[in-house]
Each structure stands twice: as C-alpha cells, then as structure tokens.
Image (cartoon, rainbow, N blue to C red):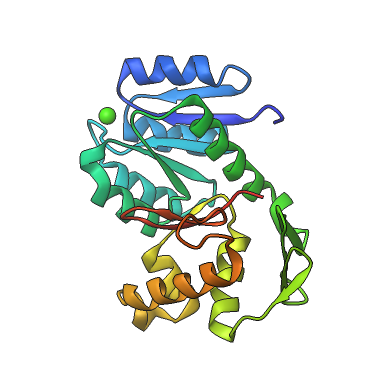
Length: 226
Ligand code: CA
C-alpha cells in the first residue's frame, strides 16, 4: 500500500497510541474532538478518515453527516459493542465501513486498504472481477463459477452487481434495499434475505458456509474483497 494520509478522530489516548503504532507506514493526523476533526478533514485532505463514534463534543454520527455535506473521503467508523445502532446509522448516513473495538491490526489494514482502493477509483476501472473460481463481468453482465455459466434473474444480478462494485466493504440492509428495490423498500429486509439465499445457492460451494457473500451480523452483507 502506498503511503496514505489518514485522519484519526478519537478521544481515547490508548486507542490513538495503538493506531499510531499500527499505521506507522502512513502519515497519521490526529484529532481528539469532533470539532478538531472537522477542521483537519478540510485543511489536511486525508485519504481515509477513522472516526470514533463516542466523542466528547460532537456525536460521531453528526460528524459523519457534516463530513458528507462536502466530502466523499472514505470514513471508517470505530465503534464499541454498545454502539451497534449508532454504527448502522453512521453507515446509512454515508460512512463506508466500520471496525468494532477491540479490532485486530489485520482487520484495520484490510478496511483501510479497501477504503483507499475504492476512493482512488482503482476498483472502478476494471469490469471483470475475480473472486477465486468466481468471475463476475459487470459490463457484459455475466457470472461464471469454475468456468460454468451461472444463470441469474434480473433482481439477483442487480443485487450481486451492487455488492461486487463495493467488494470488501459492508453494505447495510437499507443501502442494498434502496439500491436494488428502491427507496420504498428500505425496511423490507425479508426480500433481501430471500435473494441472498438464492444467490448463495447459485454461487457458493456450501451455501451454509459462504465464502463470497458474507453476513455482517446486525448490519448487512459484505462481498469478499477481490
Ligand atoms: Ca471515545
């Protein structure tokens, strides 16, 4: 990974120390309040923002909303277990991904790598995506598994293509329902579960232990990183 400028908005000194050590290969800009974070986001033009949800001044969810008024810089929220609802709200408000504390260095680096790749546009230029023996051609709209064509219905295709375009990143139930079925269906989770089941049967070796179409419990789904 090339050197990135990362903005960390986090009030806990111990968490800042951990991230400073973990992200030593990158330039880390630190803020301990939401207000400071908002200023630095504008003045330092970070590649990725790591945002704690529990800040002393402005709620992390509000920081997300305020950032999304003017920037598309990827936001990865850092949440504690008891902030699960806030985490989903932050994702629905435009955050790109999340990490639940405590998280591993490996998880952190994977999230940052995916976020930076999507932000750079590198993920958008190639229409053919490879996931092991699964090949998805977004331009020509076909899928093969082990070289065999997989037949999908229009809704199944739309759901798959939506997730593949964001591979490696979580998509909330609400985001998927809005994109695939439309805004009026944003709460109809049962449609999503049914179609995810169909896709898993067609794409996965063992649909009960998916390798591609992964569940993020209580949040949504994540297609495997390419
Ligand atoms: Ca905090």
